[in-house]
Length: 203
Image 1: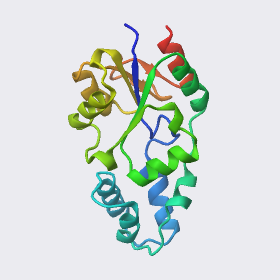
Image 2 (image 1 turned 180 degrees about the horizontal axis):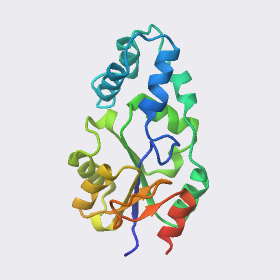
Image 3 (image 1 turned 30 degrees about the horizontal axis):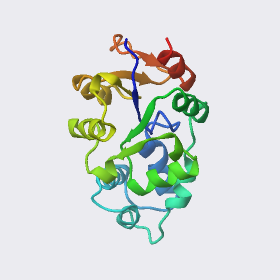
């Protein structure tokens, strides 16, 4: 495989340890804080917010809260191992790094500040800011436009196969991230850790 120049890196499940942030973080957080909304209502509110249809403050109100819990909620997130070291190495090696994420706009900004991620990336394409979520093909067009890179020079790293397939259709290289091997898609390369990403790129 020819060397990629631009790396598009997912946030949830790649930069951050949990891929299902709604099921593993948001729903338990809301129930802990006393929301009377069920899981489906919380999920729908999150999806609307992650499409930019309301602010994070609007999300908390929709879920029955008077408080804006943004600052407390983002403390529940953690980075995957070796993220900062690998990002520094990749940037030093000349790769252009972009984050492509389905997320609430305010949470994305707070998280990148909390973990000091901003300096590693050329840009962030966040669903809550652009109004479209992966795997909608439009968001891949947006990231290609923002980077100015040809699809064949780009590698997209995500933990979900359904998000990788549209990138493949755009002519991008892809890499599935995660500890569980996907036997149904053996032709898609996979990396179990950020250290493995570095090895893959230098292979």
